[in-house]
Each structure stands twice: as C-alpha cells, then as structure tokens.
Length: 85
Image (cartoon, rainbow, N blue to C red):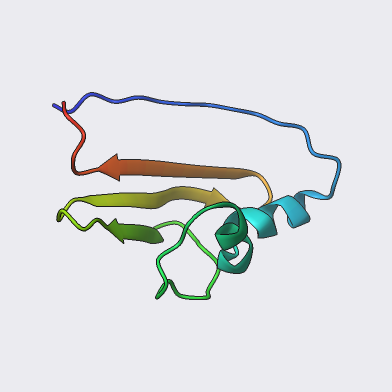
C-alpha cells in the first residue's frame, strides 16, 4: 500500500465565501496563483476534475479534485509519478 500524507489547513479571509470559491475553482484565477497546462479547459473545476502536468522525463504530476462542496469544502489529491514509496 502507498504511504499517505494528509495536510489540513485553514485561513480566514475577509470576503464572501463565494468569492474565495471562485478563486479556488475557476481556471482563470487558479492560473494566477498556480501553473496550469496551456490546454487546460476554461470550465470551473468540480469533483473529478484533474490537472495533469507532463514532465519532459515522462513523469506526471496529477491534481484531482476529490470533493467540491461549493463555498464550503474543497479536497484535492496530489500524485507524483516520481515519488518514492
């Protein structure tokens, strides 16, 4: 079985939850604070959405939205094919 690392974090931002949510799931905003592949779709990210980065050496990094409860909770899994178990 693969090792698992769980990270939980919380930050208070003085703006409506809907605005924070938009910045976290809208690719236009996500691209301002994180890299997205050039061909990433413009639709908002939802449960099941994936961002796949193909590395020159053939490795991949994959971010998958596991849970997306609008304005409430966003759970994301990160996988790196070159990570050692």
